[in-house]
Amino acid sequence: MGKQTVSRTRAGIAGVVGAVVAFGIAELVHGLYPSVPSILVSIAQRIVELTPGGLVTAGIELLGTADIPTLIATVLLGTVVITFLLGNLAVRHQALALAGVAVLAAVAIAAALADPFVPTVPTVITIVGALLAGSTVTGLLVRVASPRPMAPPSKEEASLTAEPGSAASPVMRSREAGSDERIFVGRGGFLLLGGGAAVAGLAAAGVGRLLGGGTVESAARPKKLNLPEAPDEKQPAGKGGQEEAQKAKGKSVTHETLPQPPADASIDVPGMPDLITPASSFYLIDTALTSPRIDVNNWKLSVKGAVDNPVEFSYKDLLGMPTREADITLSCVSNTIGGGLVSNGRWTGVLLSDVLEEAGMSRDKITSASRQLVGRSVDGFTAGFKTDIALDGRNALVAFGLDGSELPIKHGYPVRLVIPGLYGYVSATKWLTEIELTNWNFDAYWIQRTWSKEGPVKTQSRIDTISDGDNLSAGKNPIGGIAWAPHRGIEKVEVSTDGGQTWNTARLAKQLAEDTWRLYIYDWDASPGDYTIQVRATDGNGETQTAQEAPPHPSGATGNHTIEVTVG
Image 1 (cartoon, rainbow, N blue to C red):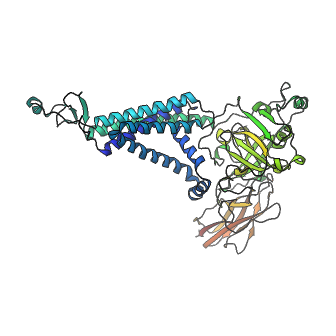
Image 2 (image 1 turned 90 degrees about the vertical axis):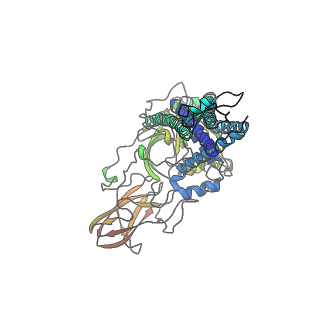
């Protein structure tokens, strides 16, 4: 058999086209059957989990909210490089190339099956089928781009130079003695076939993403929260044994709701944020690249560890317990000074202290073995904080509602933890499935990645009505925004227009709750010139936020939000 003469470039392109076809098929299946995960996202998720903590933190600090898109782009680029090399390898060592494809299949299957609630058989069939289809396309492209040595043409054949199979045609038949004929395409034909296959793969991926996007869009509109009028007499709140069943019987159930926020808790000035953040606009930071899809009928919340009475709750159990509605501001530890990773929501849920009471835990029973409360998500994420915080009287919630509706999937449906006064990385476990009381030696997810063990929210403030670099008109210019110190409240906000040399007391809107942000406004009568504007807040304990600047890592950013403006 003669030596194949396909170029390395064409072989590599054939490998990449095969990968595009495989990707398109996998994404199409994901769109049609969302229980089968997006393979690309699953691989990226495993990379996040396996990356050393120091590198994760460095990536967050360097890239900010661009970290996830950068990761996905890197995975895509890596896939292109690997499949380009496999395409080259297929020309010289077909068996080794197939072995490489088998390794890719194994990696993809392992990554996908590590996601929670993934159906094994459909996922394996999807991955194997997609890679087989992609490998077949690659093999065909390599074959048609690889002419074999041709026998000398006869005089009749040589005279047909303009017919198919002649040198003048983009498609030629090559043959050698004793072998089957094969089609060989020229450069234009190869690009036509490869491009067509790539377009088909990308179209399949696009349809899959469109179908998946429709599912996400519908999931982003959660149903209204429907709380039962009374508990189920046949079922105790927590399934912890006969004693708990007796306790549950006859227990009155109340659903505490809040009135509409008073008008004087808001400030109607252009640029001011809403007092209550709409669920669709609530900030979003996750370690999960995609939200787990949980069947609420099969979901359970277990309370275990160093408790007297380990218990388990269904979703119906929680809804049948006394519930509470609370306005609570949440913020992310990675928020920069003046950043947008902070929102204020109206949450509905069961007091965490009530859930712990069902497990026999109270404040006077906390020991070294139960000093830390660890929330665990269905995907294995963990967050931990001092158990005492859950029992000190604050509105620490096992939450299942936001703004009067069920939790959106991306915000933790069906149940999450909402703990006022703590950054989310130590407290706000989404897709909650387990609460464990344990000792302080356990290090949760972000603690293993070099963030501070405790995460109290620092007093912060932000300017919203004007932005850095704005050109303002002389005269009245309202400087307003938000200040927050959850569980301490805001006592005072001050604005400086001369770089912090002098401070002016701003007018405060009514404090909706000590756990929420507070709106402020300062009416600045501005004269022409260049100005450095700053804001600072004082919390309910009388402590003013520090002007000392520090980055978010490891325990939250500090400093005064500062902007430069010009008044004309």
